Amino acid sequence: MKKLMKNNLSTTAIALLLLCLADLPGRSEVQYAGIAPNPAAAVQTIIDKRPVLHADGIKFGAYDPHGDFGAQANVATEALFLPWEDVDLETLRVADAYALARGRNLLITVEPWSWDVDWRLTSAQLRAKVLRGDYDVNMRSIAHMISELKSPVILRWGQEMEDKSGRFSWSGWSPQDYITAYKRMMDIVRQEAPGTELMWSPKGEPGLQAYYPGDDYVDLVGLSVFGLQRYDELAYNEHRTFSQALKQGYDLVAGYGKPIWVAELGYEGGDAYIRPWIETATLKQSAFPNLQEVVYFNDRDVHAWPFDLGRPDWRVVENLDSN
Image (cartoon, rainbow, N blue to C red; front, top):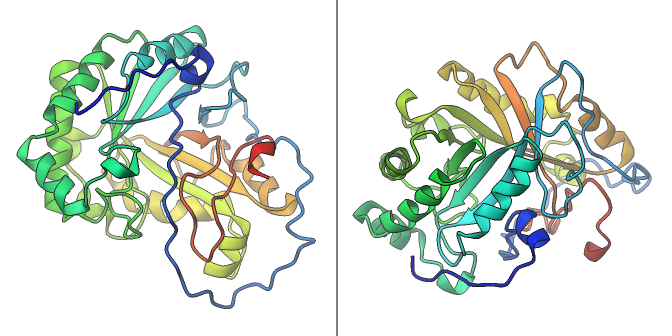
């Protein structure tokens, strides 16, 4: 690795899962007519919007840098995000201990870049270096550390690869280049940490099928599902439910016959908008028989959303720092 940061982070901060603080500028988009803004409909009085967990429902996990789910007993998975540059991998041991003490799996999303924007390469530069093998050592170091962890680990690499918004440096590569890179990284994981499950995780957009690396390289499929009331009004001219937001991506990947997760879930809006999400996100539904787990993204979004909507705060309890 170019640099391993030796930050003296507190145990709490580390266990709260290596929060990415970098912000990327949002794209300018032409705002068009949708549902007219209704301030009354956007009022949120619900003070804790965590999903209802049904006794016979879908398993639940969380990316939880604020510890809001720390004492909740029925959380199956502890999620974290990890760049493969500029990070002290010893912090994974603390996250492992945190998950192990609560009987949770670890879902580790490895993002193939630095969270320091000054270190980031262009998409073409990153692709060339990954395919050339320049970052094999980074992936090998992460995989070796994973092999020493005690919690069951699921590895998610280079998520949302079919996204065309420019949000991630690895998104939008040609399908063959992405598949070659994905397989290269997962081969390293299998060599160093053979017990690790592999998650292929598109966003859920049309065209994702071209990026499928093959059944041998996928244990689980992860999708991203977010609901933002004002975005729905502008982009869809309606308020979407969790089921509506999930359906497109689910239908595109169901044919692979793999267990499906919502690897990132979040919602924000008025009470009438978020209440159905709260009630149904972990509810078993006949339309989604392969859905096994949903993982809540319990923080403010790192990136700005279209239509000048800023960075939505998905946190389940009010975050005073974001006001």
